[in-house]
Amino acid sequence: MLSVTGCSGMFSGEQTVFIDGSKLQQKLDTRFPVDKRLLGMFDVTVSNPRLSFDPAANKLGTRLTLATPAVFGLMPAMKGNVDLAYGLRYEPSDHSVRMTNVEVKSVDLKDEKGQGNSRANNALAMVGEQMFQDYTLYKFTASDLEKASKYQYTPTTITVKRNGVDVLLVPRK
Image (cartoon, rainbow, N blue to C red; front, top):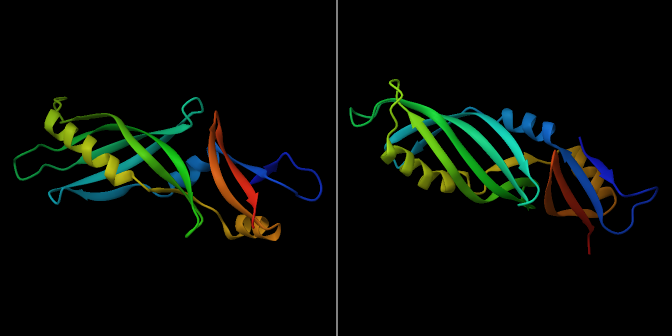
C-alpha cells in the first residue's frame, strides 16, 4: 500500500510515503453510503464520493451525492451533489488521515421536478462543514505502522499531489 520515496538502503532522516489517489478512493468507497441525521430533523444519505486533488491549494476535493426523504410535508424528497474542499491532517491517536478546514463549495439538491430549495441547500452547506470536520479518510494498516515503527518513524505533514498524497515521516525523538 505504501511506497517510501527518497531513500536507499538503511533509512536516515526524514522520509516521504506516497499514498496513491486510487488507493485513497478505494478506501473512501468502503465508507459509503452513510446515513446522517441533520439538525435533529431530517435524514440524509451520503454516497458516491469522488476525490479530486488540488496541489496548488494543498487540498483534496470530494463530490458527494446526497439524498433526503420528504420531511413532514415541509420539504419534498431531494437529491443532488455537494462539493467539499479540505486539508488533511494525521491523527496519532488512531493512526488516521482526517479532513480538516472543511469548506462546502457548493450544494445543489433538487426535488423530483428539478426544483431547488435554497433553504435546504443553505442549511446543508452550514452543517456540511461540521459534519465532515475531522472525518477519517484513511487509516494506516498494521503493516504500514509496523514498517514505520521498525525504523522509529512517525507520520507528520501531509502534502496533496496531483494523483495522491505524500506523508512526511520523521524520526521519533
